[in-house]
Image 1 (tube, rainbow, N blue to C red):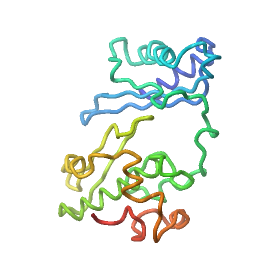
Image 2: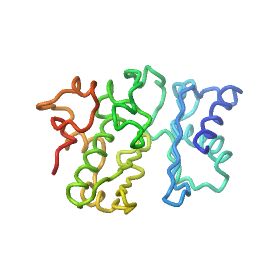
Image 3: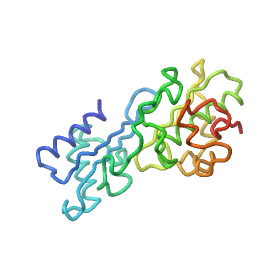
Image 4: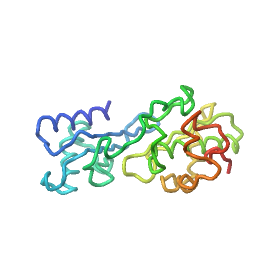
Length: 230
């Protein structure tokens, strides 16, 4: 609800002409703690070139905070809890800025309805996109947790903010509900896209190919590096 309201506010300000330099591609993310309380807010708003905006990058951030974030989340929201356009300038958006195959097999490519899946497709994206690489890493973590901790199942969630190197949230829960998130953070303190790419050798496939992964699922096939035990 909060994420949607942030995006609706951006849309309304763009359509009304109040912030005519806004463009249609917008994203918002709200991170909740285990008790359901918001602890982090991320907004990415596409905008015109700075010359057309008549604003600096920092002024764009300040405007979005005062005209979008505060009206939606409250005037007392701390600035340090909100990240706005964390990647820098956001001029190129839509399919031009983030293209890939249509991704109609998001669920079947993973575990079917058995395990919650993120909203991003795999095939068509390089490892810099955490939709793909972090999903592989979550599988890698879960499989090694089962192997090392004498458990039967482990569900891993990794959530990233736009423009952030490290995840906003990492959780791991066993089939009995035990929280083993601390174990994950001890074993894998770095979960940046760069580390994941190097750890799983996603740019140097040996004995496997992305072509193989595009059919018959991405998991439970031993040639893939995210299936290997450490």
